[in-house]
Image (tube, rainbow, N blue to C red; front, side):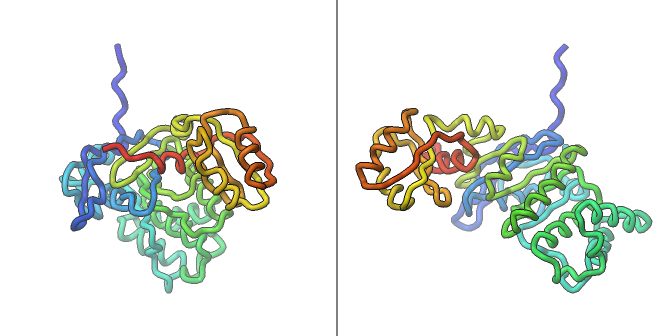
Length: 311
């Protein structure tokens, strides 16, 4: 007897939203398993924030519907909101209130019982490394600490699903790693996380990712499946003048993609012979070191973003 597939934590069918002449989200179908860490990727204006806001019941869809833990965002938004934690792009806590006052205020709004608030707050702050800052005003926290405070406030009612809209944008690398350590702990506890991120190293940490462009999901799968979509062989070039080397490689026979990644030129070729790259650079008068490299999410994103979207 075949086992019945488990119901998803999030399921969207034909979800759409327009703002004037702009179709921000265009018929998105999405299915996210319970306990997944699902990354939403895409360029600015791709529709990531609009999609998350519809799932969070902040925006009403024009067409289609989505169900979170079985409840419709259109017909049962009041049943959805107690089950979710939503972090918008903008820090929305009160800068003049202390860490404890902010958490207590939002816990009250979420209906967390009074006798539960204090011990739960202390447990969360301890786990996030904020316990010693409980009496500090939120406005005096660093960017990374503000985001951890925002997350602690979001977790006070113990949501089943977290909807995070680029929560680490502008946060220093150390704080980003700490934030993702916390998310990994929530993942182990079974919390479902949908996170929009501009950082490809964060995408690598997800169980599944989707590329959103023009309001549509263009590619979806595990990080390994997404990287497998990239054809050819990747080479990294260390050159005396990276930008000039980049220009010299444009038009190279068999070239699939070429872009600058910091001071390194990444070249995606149909061939696996690095001499093709070396010869082109030598002919152009550049000294360079060429070596084969593994495709990562940064390369996959750059390559897939260059593809012509399917109609």
